[in-house]
Amino acid sequence: MSRTVIHGGLVITASDEIHADVLVEGGRIAALAAPGTDATAGWSAERRIDATGKYVIPGGVDAHTHMEMPFGGTYAADTFETGTRAAAWGGTTTIVDFAIQSMGRSLREGLDAWFEKADGRCAVDYGFHMILSDVNESSLKEMDRLVAEGITSFKLFMAYPGVFYSDDGQILRAMQRASGNGGLIMMHAENGIAIDVLVEQALAEGRTDPRYHGDVRKVALEAEATHRAVQLARVAGAPLYVVHVSADEAVAEIAAARHKGLPVFGETCPQYLFLSTDNLAEPDFEGAKYVCSTPLRPREHQEALWRGLRNNELQVVSTDHCPFCFSGQKEMGRGDFSKIPNGMPGVEHRMDLLHQAVVEGHISRRRWIEIACAAPARMFGLYPRKGTIAPGTDADIVVYDPEAEQVLSAETHHMNVDYSAYEGKRITGRVETVLSRGVPVIEDGAYMGHAGHGAYVPRGLSQNL
Image: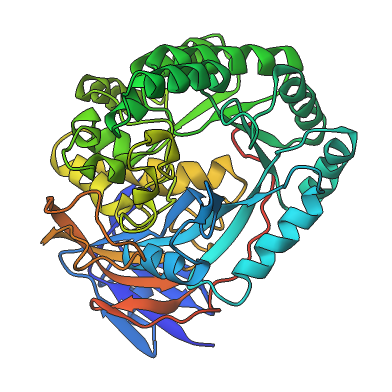
């Protein structure tokens, strides 16, 4: 059984910062001990990693990705192979992707299709949520079976009529089912019916540029849908997790629910924390690179999101990684913003951008690890196997250099997309070495992994409930 010792580093988890050496044995963490003590003196190992001056942190858990997702007549540009490799480069060692039920088809058929895409191709570990596109008596019964198999979260959409949209009655029924089987309902909270009216009106008036994508998807319509989702969950007696929260009024709705003691949780994404409608308004159709839903907001919304992350009104930062190349994909929407595929790349940069937030004083080091590793693992039934560094947990470990500087660029990133949403952004901090279940995937800035190392991880019920 192979053994690795990581020595000299500062181990940071959501709860502690301690100078400790870490012993890895057989893919798990066997022990932590203060350096230079009798305990560590007896540690023999085939591999020793010097982490002096570095952070030793848990591998990131990105609980919201869309590899190979079909959307608007095309597919997300990252496969499970390229996307999980990029995740590893960025210090993320577990993703939870979304399997999709097609209209008129079973949940099982959708899930099997996603297993076929992912099996034997992932560089890091992976799990699945299930998107419910067709809520009916049959799919409601299937939810129970999926929960028993480790697919314990289900996403519904208040947006995209004719594609993913569920009405309030369908949402209520799914929430009631989750209330009984312990599953967690994830909600894309935007009033899609009203948004479609505004899209139609904007195009009729000749407002076709990418910036109008953000203009028609009003803050009020995200807030209204968030409020409605909370009340439906309240009626159903079910927990609720609101994905990609982008605006101050939506944060306020989640905060109000939590102040009443309701099991309501919120996620935001780096694009809402670091980008804005200024990007959507970039000339020469460049704004199309930043089209995603919920949309980017005016910069003044960022402080509400940071505040929500600091005070636990928002619990998780995921990426909603759903990349489409500018050339040939985003360009499908020239002359009609509603035809621009909705989605942005980000799985490689989440850990680094959140470390930059530490450098800039938005969050503490432990909060960084909480929102990027521990909280998503707890929220989706992976903790403590994932999301922390402790004896018995999977040895998903990142040696992180907090002083290294880098410039984010499409020239150097590893995502399968032809642009960077953060082109030219200079940040401090960089992944140096990544272990996935004790196996080096990134070592001293070189990729050592391979497709098929990543294993499917069945999930338990949310540990936040």
